[in-house]
Length: 84
Length: 484
Image (tube, rainbow over all chains, first blue to last red; front, side, top):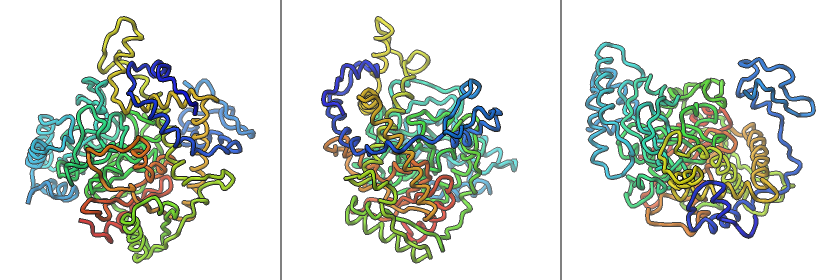
């Protein structure tokens, strides 16, 4: 985490006029927890969205063509129809 | 004997048989709610409930009673209910009154349930004490000086106090299970995808799931059975057909029950003793108890230096707050909710969104910070990767064991006036519950024992869509514990 937390900038991003006074301390406290997230995960790559396809049943309900399915290289092409 | 002390199953049967009128039951329920000082309801639907009870009585007299005809329920104020104000316990919602019904509440209405009111909660389901509500804090019926837990604290308090037979809650990181544990009742969160999220005000969409709180596992299952099932209005709804959970037998013979050894160090001696006792009771009923080494759940090459449960909590807060940042961006007061005009559109947004409570504001600021930290999305991307990794690891664990047993919370309910040193301490309340949401598993909390008279819950977690196994273990444990 960065050492200086720009509360005014965060206030603009979330579009809230008055953030609580303890926001700076809160973010610093939670950063301690966030730092326990393992860092050496570079070897983990996202799997193609096969599970998503199954759960949403896009194959059945929208007749997704072969080009919509994951390729052997694990890339997933989302057709305009699926997006819509 | 007051009808309010009966179980949901009993009262449903008595009403169907014509031995008790729904009109009487609803009148008793409304009377109890009026007398209660728990602040467990934001809106009480008195006229509507009485009218519905009269219709139910007519149906019963005509032999047209539905499964749950006339059963009074509390509904967490996060579910959209047609023509009933829905607030998510936030000022920003104003007098928002949905023009449609959420899928789960619609299904319960179709079964004859009567909604007596909308339960208080932590604002936008963010919290584990029910102190973060724009409508005031909720008191725990076990001891009114204590928190009821959260975020579904209103429903848990109402069920425990006998103000309704069951209550609907939502569970993103333990919001049904933890308040159930604090109030001494049952709280069940089914597998992600088992219940439709349509009409449920979103906090973190990839983890939000509807759940039920009741006074027994069977009562909770009776309600859950009527809610679950595929819904075309929710793209994450599952087509997997779950068994009828109310009919699952309390048979654990030959089942393997796991417990995570490393978690033993995170709880007090009393909680640990309760946990071990629960495992022994399951072993007595023929289950095989298996210790799970946390290293089985975490890649040794990651080289964690702390308890991995802390990482799970961190991942949960990174993902949930970022999803909330996106979900809550819609609240600008222009289309619905409370609008505060300013001189410019930007100023109007800023003033309107200033109506969020402090906890919501903090979490949104945290999410904005996470997403703007360099390198961009560092924590969010790492969290998403780690979550996928955990899903895979837990899927492997559930090939070896049927269920995992753990405490629901590291502590019993604490005083309403007690404020932790920092938010981190508050978030530690969720340390045993968040993982079920991260890996989409079902989990249930059942009252197991007491510490200084205060209830303590045990959590049973199973693999995704293995809800029936979880219920079998929960029923067996409930029988064995004989908790009153």
